[in-house]
Image 1 (tube, rainbow, N blue to C red):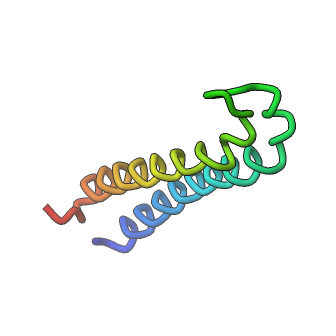
Image 2: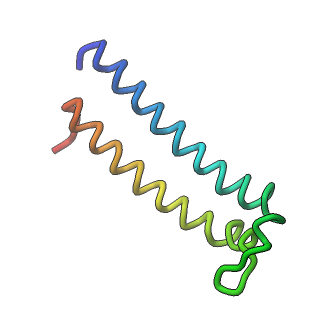
Length: 85
């Protein structure tokens, strides 16, 4: 891979990571801790929403983020012709 393409590849990779880590931080820290009292006014499955985010929702979002990252990186690898297949 040429130097210019390598820089673009890693810049795009870091953008993906920054966005996904921001989502991770928002769900785990903000929704699960900071805004828990506000979210507890709403219920999901009989439990307060803040509690649900802290104990169940965050896990679901983390797993989804893993699949999103794999999808984005596979697409990026194909775009820069560095995919394994």
